[in-house]
Image (spheres, rainbow, N blue to C red):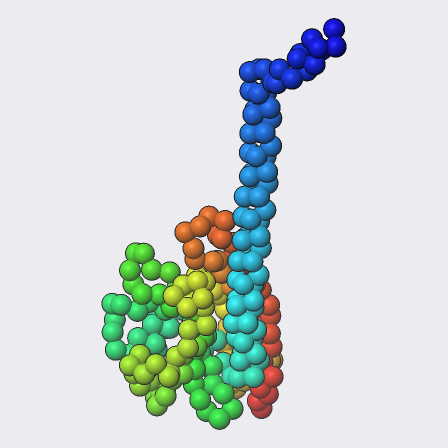
Length: 220
């Protein structure tokens, strides 16, 4: 009896027991893999979102600061006027969708604008453009040929950020400082929508920004 029990206890696992063990192990590996992939995608999305927020917020605050410390040149700019001022050389390649053109205390004219190459697969970018030798209609010297006259703030080929929307709402819509004007400090509401430009769907994040700033330049 003792010998038979010893032999019976050393027979090993049956085929069914092995299959059940392998099934349980496979389910555990699958569950752990799913959790790891989900965690990795979440981390990737969080990191991308933070990068998008940091870069977009820097550009947004720069625009607000420049508007706050400068004079507004045109209180009702439309795309046609933006293009007439900023398209100084070519007429078919550049497309300036929205802009605000300002003048610093030292007389320097510059533009904050959404910019797009006039192609179907092109994304918009945000540019800071310095203008020089402008006449009374704000037709200025060529700036495209000199890279020092413009800065890309947000662009897919710069920081993987696409400018999906930009609007400047100026109040009042006409110069308040001319004779008969409203004689009030102008306010500008900035709306901006940015997205991270990447084929990975887990990096497709967006951020919306909005603020209203008042010019601190006082005129009589």
